[in-house]
Image (tube, rainbow, N blue to C red; front, side, top):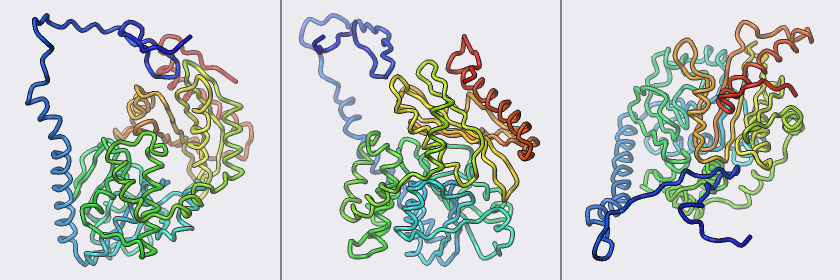
Length: 425
């Protein structure tokens, strides 16, 4: 059938399952002359949006400068999420470089692991300066040497060091993030913009505003610009979900980044463990209402980044718009187990943050087990008292079956609210 321009009566939505949008009929008042043009106030409002955005950015940049001035000569800890992604890594590095202009020395920390092959390649190939502090290691540090901490690409809820660092009396100097507000932030400087798709975009705006003048002859600046470009691409799905701000940031970074270095990061090969996770997700997935749901059993702590990569793979299947992959991750160092899950979606009307929070709710202290951003999300649910004992294969199997059934049931309550059979595969 030939393509034709849809009318109000046959227009369909642009999602993969081809649902028909409700027919909307707008009744216009009769007019004797030509249709009226938009009022001047309406046009002015549209025209003012860029200037209002620029005014807001100018205000934030000035507030950031003032914060750095107040903290001159201090030492700060930059806290990333336990499993930092390219957006967090590149943004934290940029903050560190800007802070050095104000004689502020920063240490970039994460408590979990770098297990995604691209993250490992990014750190190795750029020499990105970061340290891994487990909670036990943090307890051996002299925290009195630090006068502030900074949350980059998170708000403290996804960093297991947060409670200990704040409990040691270290104040929050800054929180810069693009995720939805997780709660009240008692920070000296706050820039939380969920309408921006990448924290790397926010930091590139700081650079464009003169917080740090990148120099293409400076090797460190070139590597940092490359990391920012990777972070921006990563959180905008290779710019396919990019907005005007992201494109402007990418255009600015194009003057400084190293395309060959970025290509080397992107071409890093998948590990055997990632391939195993993808294989298990294919074997155990169930597909209902265009959702693909897969529990993949037990994983090593160092391999937890294979879960989002498996979700990335499943969402590419025909007639699937959303994929959820989860497994039990065992941390031998801390002797704990956690159910870790990842969601990926191509459905524009599905909000991962709302979906995950509705599916899994909150813990006893009111903290949500997960959340998300545009087209991606994740969750962590402690196994708690049932942790360990996996040397007994029968016990380990029964424990997995219980958690697998419970996770599926909670997901299917949203996927099939009227008919919710827990399907075994």
